[in-house]
Every structure is written in C-alpha cells, then in structure tokens.
Image (cartoon, rainbow, N blue to C red):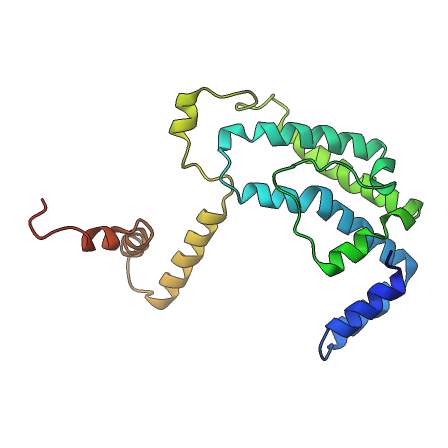
Length: 212
C-alpha cells in the first residue's frame, strides 16, 4: 500500500529538474483535499474514461457501440447514486476488452482509493452524474442503432469511424496547406489532400505500363 508521502516522494524522484509548475503540483498534492480529488479522478480514469478512450480508438463497428454505451450508462447512473463499491475495493471493469494501461504512478493513486473520505465519493458521484446527463441526452430517442444490426448494415458501415478524429486531422492538414499556399484554390488543396490520403500514388506505382 502506497501512502500520500510515498507518492510525492516517487514523483519527486522521477521528475528531473522540476520547473515551477511541477513544484506547485507537488505542493498541492501535500494537501489532503487535493490529493483525494486526484485519487478520485484516477478512479474515473481507471473505470470509465481510459477504457472508453481505448474503445473509441478500436476497430469496433459503429452500429455495435450500443453494446458498450448501454452498460456504461447503467453503471454511471448507479454510481451517481451510490459509488461505495468503487471505494471499497476492486470492481469488474465495464469494458473487459479495453482495460486501462497501468503505470507506477497510476497504481499508486488507485491503491489509495480505500482511504478516500466522503468528499471524494461526492466528487465521483457528481462526475458520473454529469456523464449520465450527457448520455441520457444522446439516448433520449432510444438510439437509431440501439439493437443488434443486420449483417448488411454492418457491411455498409464497416469503414465508418467511431470518432471525428480523422476529420479533425484532415481539417488541420487543410489549414496548414492554406497557410503555405494562400493563393491556391480550395479545390487544389482538397485534391492534394485527397490524393495523399487515399494512397492513389502508391496504387499507381504498382500498376504496369500496359494497365488500362
């Protein structure tokens, strides 16, 4: 079992030449209230946000996400009302196939979850309640894809991305291209980006000279 002082010593020894911001962080951790809040956030990350992030970066089908969202909504609603099981010991992960990646600092924080006071439980319940509000808003109509999809729909949407991260990357690349060539048209920039993204040049390299 790691205690607060052990964690502070661990962080101090593993931070080379800490700047003022890191020094301030270490001083904040010496406060019991702040430390409990950090442990609480680590618990949210361990059981909810990190597995969820692993999920959205996986190769799951978009139309089968209901298998994850519905249990997540149920558990968050339960924890928003009573989260004692979280602070009393280990619990079963919501996404068994997408556990969080452990590291020394993270494990140190989770080891202290049983020592958290009532303020940490209130904060954890508040955070899960906020997550529940967002999910309830998204699932208010039952969800278009809230049940087992037929195989044809899975095939039609097999390349649909779970997140908008690829689109954000494209917009970032477009913004960079426009700054480099301000006089070029939007059609020109879009064509160049599309040419690079769909790997047309690689495809052409493997074509023979006689190919039509």
